[in-house]
Length: 212
Image (cartoon, rainbow, N blue to C red):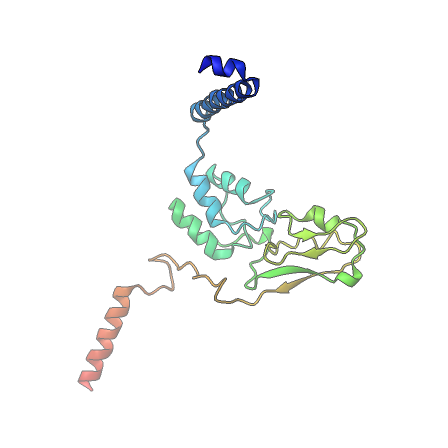
């Protein structure tokens, strides 16, 4: 076998390359396991609860940095896009009281919106492309821009930089595909009727009806 390889330089080169590939692959795999950095589970859970608009209204450049700040003790009520339902979910996760949304960071909107560029008015300045935190705008310098609606998070960061004011935030009609259950109020909070209360109410109605 060795004699065959030594007589065939191409085969020898292939064997050498395969051997090096196996060696370096093993080293990289060992290094990946040895020096693996474990993420903080609570940060991951907080990040999943946030709306991922990357709008910056909370004072951070994105949802992940805000999740990290919450894990370190920051207030949980700085996210207008997530609204009260997100605050309630985070409070439930952290087992803390759920405060009202901090108005200093904006107001909650009940209607989801996406950006729309009036393309015949666009001058191709690329300022909206630079402002978009999720790369949802296509275009090039001095050419028409357009928004990828499925990628747009509705953060409206592209509206203000536009020098010709050709970007509108349009409401998105809710469909079965994007409809989600709203996060319920936690038991014990004012205004919520739990199952036992409802059963008691039905029993009272039944008793009243029999008496009549």
